[in-house]
Length: 408
Ligand code: CTP
Image (cartoon, rainbow, N blue to C red; front, side, top):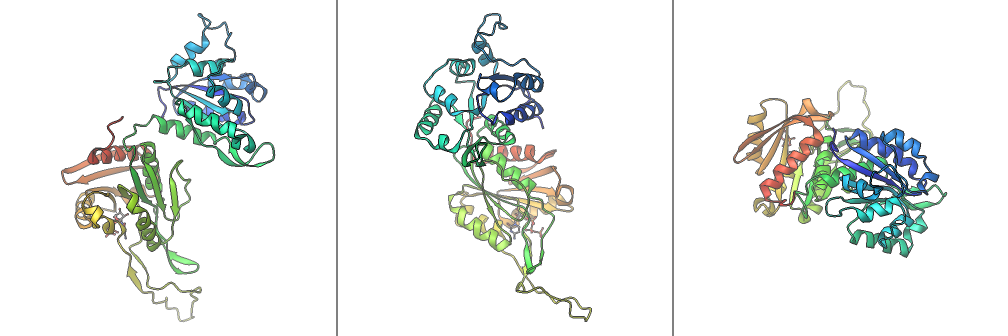
């Protein structure tokens, strides 16, 4: 998916060991469809050669404000006018300090100051030693750069090149890419709180066995990511899946349907939108055995008793907040056949304003899907596409229905 198709990005590198990650970031930006103009400070050139960055970006790198290649000899003006965004990764403590004070003694700081700020956003990915990051002077400069309109991305925590451990690592290239992609998405759910369930649940039979299903959680994780990209604060309650948490999303891991209900109940009062994508197990063993159930030699399987799990979606949809639409509830229906009829019946049964039908066996574990949206006015098909694209379309449909997102 070419999320940055048609975008021209100035990728600025200031001095730091994290420059080695910027080579990968450059490749990822190109792969996402962007064109990339690399600008390096002198300090950055101590860590990474312009030759490497030129080869990766397929454009000559700029490093000096006196570069005579520009006809008008104003590289800072030309480069900043062409860009759809400037991303500085790594942004060193020194570079952030210069930006905070409006200093412009090299090409990179000069073009940041000269850029038309209303249409060329500036994203900073800080990278430095943990003491430098925590220093009040750095934090002051970060706050000032933010107040002046820069989007200062977070920092990672972990091992640092200096041998110390703590906050201050540059985000990983994929995380920076995702932040940039998110930045360009319309903020249709700005100010909204969204609660999402995703993945299967696992109902224990004994300490080593249980009942679950084939849900991968990919659709729900894509929905959580798309909601966050649209400006919402997102809580994701996830059954047992091995997927990375979308950036900026609060994740709560649960196992069983009862755990999921408890987590959802705890977070529902703050939410304005609830999207239930989880494939909740319909039944659980009445009582999980405390020890492993052994074969008794009779050839007979154990006589397991089951009890129905609570319906999390229906519980919320039929609550006071659900009924009054203070909590806008969206359900999913994983069907194997008769999608329209089954999904329509499910919408009625659960009492949700919007139900999203899909054919479970066609999508479980896949990266793409096709959706059928059903509400009181009728149906709408979202044809086969990546789960992330569909999730973004679904978020737009939800925003439209709740009247959110004047800003595009
Ligand atoms: N759901 C839920 N709690 C349950 C069962 C389902 O919150 N105990 C939610 C799912 O997250 C989904 C919707 O209800 O949003 C429909 O789930 P689905 O598994 O398709 O349907 P069921 O209600 O289980 O009905 P059936 O198995 O009969 O198709």
